[in-house]
Length: 434
Image (tube, rainbow, N blue to C red):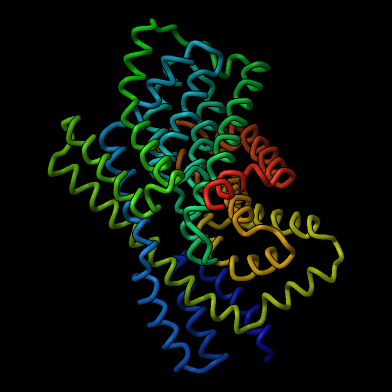
C-alpha cells in the first residue's frame, strides 16, 4: 500500500473517531502513532510520541496560554465584562438595537482578555441576554448577537487560535497578535452595521431603550476603565515592544488579580474556581497540541501534502481560485468540527500548500481564523450556537441560527476585504517588526 493511501486511511479513521465522540487529542494521538508505526516502524513512532509530548510542554512561548486563560477567568470573576456591557448599554442603549450593539462591544472587550470564543459567548450570554429580553428584544437578534460576538474571541488578541497557529507553523505570536487587531476592529464594525440594518428593516427586533444622564454614562465609563487599562497595558506593551507576548500575559494576569482584590471578590472559593477552570482549559489545549504534533509527522510521511498540492495546482484555477476552494472547504468542515480542532488537523496539509502559492503566512493566519469563526456559527453544528442555547434554554435552536445569518454575511464581507486588501492584516505587524 502506498504512503498516500495510508494517509487517506488515517484521515478517514480520524474523522470516524471524531464522529464517535472520541476527544480530538486522543484521536490525533492514536492515528498519528499507529500511522507512523505503519510507515516508519515502532521505534520511530515511540520516539515521536515521547519526544513531541516533552517538546510541546517545554515550549516557553506556550506559557502564554495558561497566563491569558488565567487573566480572562480573573477578569470575568471580577465582573469586568459586565462593566463593559453596562457602559456600552448606557451610552448606546437608547438607540435601535443599542443593547445588541453593546453586546458586540462587550464581546470584543472580553475577547481581548480571554482569547476564547466559547468563554466570550457564555459570559456575555449570561450578562446581556436577560437585559435584551427585559427590553423586549426579538429572540433572533438577541441570541444572534451573542453567538456572533463570541466568535471575536479567537480573532481579537490575545487569541488562543493565533497561539496554536504560531506554534504549529513556527510563526511569531507577536506578529499574529498585531495582525488580528485591525481585522478584529473591522469585523466588530461590520457586526454593528449588521445590527443597524436589521433594526432598520425590523425595528421590533431591537426597540429603543431608556436614555441615561451624562452623570450615569460617565460613572459607567469610569467603572469600565479596569478592563480598558488591562487591554491597553497588554496589547500596548506588545505593540511598543515593552513586553514580549508572554510577559504581557503575565502582567495582564497580575492586574486582573489586583482588580479581583480591589473589588472584594478575592475569596478562597473564587480563587479555587478560577484556578480549576484555568488548569482544565490549559490541560485540554496542551493535550490537543501534543496530539497535533504526533499527527503532523505521520501526515508528512504519507506525502499527502505534496500529492494534494500537485493535484490542486493541476486544476489551473490560479492562486485565488485555489484559495477560494480551500476556504470554502474550511467553512463546510467548520460546520461539523470545532474550530481549533479543525486547525490542528488540517494545518499540516493546508499551510505548505497556501504559503507555497506565495501568500503571506501571517495574513493566512488571520484569514484562517476568520473562516474558523464562520464555522463556529454555521449550521448544523455551529459550536457557539449550541453554547448560547445552553445559556438561553427558552429559545429554539433554529431561531438562533436564523439570528446569526446577518452576522455570517458580515463575516463574508470582512473576509473578502482582507483577501482583497491584505494590508488590513499586515499593517501593524509590519510597522512593529520592520
